[in-house]
Length: 100
Image (cartoon, rainbow, N blue to C red; front, side, top):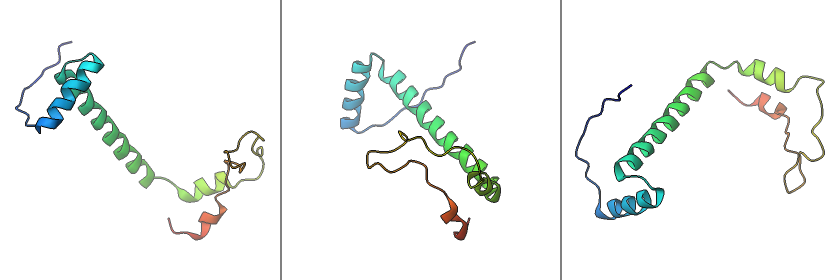
């Protein structure tokens, strides 16, 4: 499959162009390829953010809280802690009084 492309002039500050030349050379790519990949990564990040924002608007927060606060399950393992020694698990019951 052939990808259709288009061209457009790009104005960059001289210092940014110099940095792009240096970094793309270090990366083993052309400046064009480096910029295309950078743009693709930015688009993917922004689309992912939009996806999760839309998904969060459809979320049932009460169901979420019921699942997290349900009885049963297993307590955190002893090695499931951060360097301070505090467990990573934190009940969200304190969120019940906050607005969604």
